[in-house]
Length: 428
Image 1: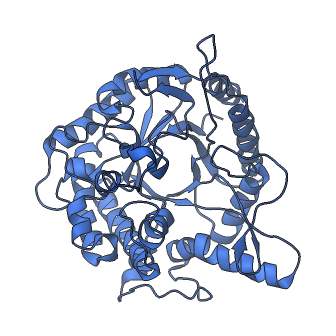
Image 2 (image 1 turned 120 degrees about the horizontal axis):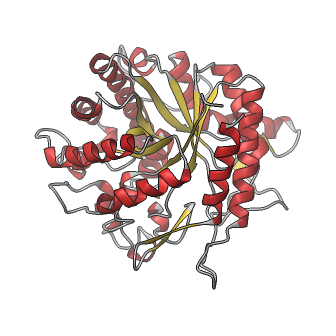
């Protein structure tokens, strides 16, 4: 399986730290973390895993792990501190060094231009509810691609527009903490619009680039066989999945979803710009009954996030996306599980539950690939334990344990299992 990429994923605000160094500007997550009551225990990403300074050590671990690719995000406030205007060369220098170090280790860089850390100045001017933020995203993309495009071939514009829009602008659970459904709808549209515009810029400046977007997608099951539950499941699917898949692949928002995005002439053509791959992040499924109401299924196992472990749903999701939308290539850009990991008396972290999660989910991916789904890679979430957004440091997703007081890295048993999994399938 030499044509299949095995990787690990992270995001800038969750691992980098160094929020006040080398000219980085304030992000909405800096402001959100500083707002009392928004993040567990008042924790912040100001230090996080200190990846900004420790990346050579972490890349050495990645090399030991044997991954083919590393998915990371570029921090917009590090590159253009005010969101628009002057480019901060010191910020770009960091990603320059990171890319060079990855390539020297034989690891393909897989950057994401936006993973939720909007410059606060742009939020003050309206954030993603304003079309001007989508416009500002274009010169930001130009700056990053102009610096790294001679060495980076795979580019992701955005990570999880649904989370940006609904958790950030609709439900207030993420930065910037707004609670307006229309704000969420407006934000979702402008994120998608900026994706299309940025995709054009990347292709213009790096003609051989492969460009994609990452969506968090969930398989949706009705709770029973009733027509009412089936209708409720379709409604949830419309808002969670089709609201993003349809404009990207079909050039139109789904007509059965009663939301009103601020579409202007030409927008949907831009949103539907050709992509070379679709990134899919998946952690759980939705089970829905009339209401619509998302319900928990009795029995089974759950992660430390309370999410049901259901690998068959990942298989079904991949088949469905391939059959209905026919993306030319799919990467599983995030898949993983949080558990309450602790170091044992021998100094190790024996995370058997995570090993089982990864084994069953990678099996589901391989089965989908064998059945003709064009899955070309899998990225475990996450390489490191890290700042888990509003949950602070309470949830550990990493295959590498981080002892936060000392920042020591400890590969978990899942790290060693993943290395063996990669080795065994690379020989196939």
